[in-house]
Amino acid sequence: MRPILHAAHRANRWLDAKLGPTYRVLLAAGLILEMGHHTRDIIDSSGQTPHLERSLMVIVLCAALLISTFAGLYEVLARRAMRGR
Image (cartoon, rainbow, N blue to C red; front, side, top):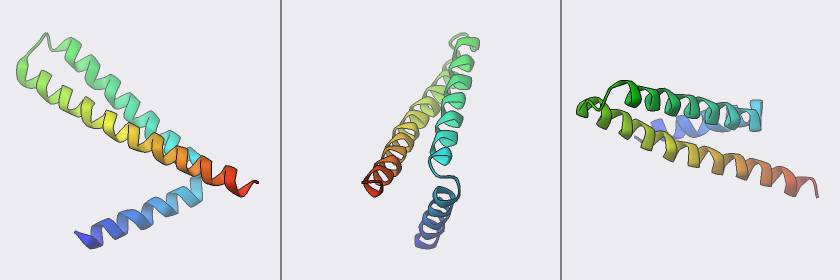
């Protein structure tokens, strides 16, 4: 597990360095689109329980990832503001 976490950390830092805040904004936009897609699935499923439960779980997971992404964006912008002082 440790090598996977290390590789993910390196990839995240590289993307942050190359794309800056745009990286976090793109992640957030993708998560919001996915949440919208699953919300539409819930509406279209007419309450079919297995589909409803799966879509709700995905929406909750996306919401948690969105919070994490926004927190990361906040940290990036705060670091930039501190460097600018």
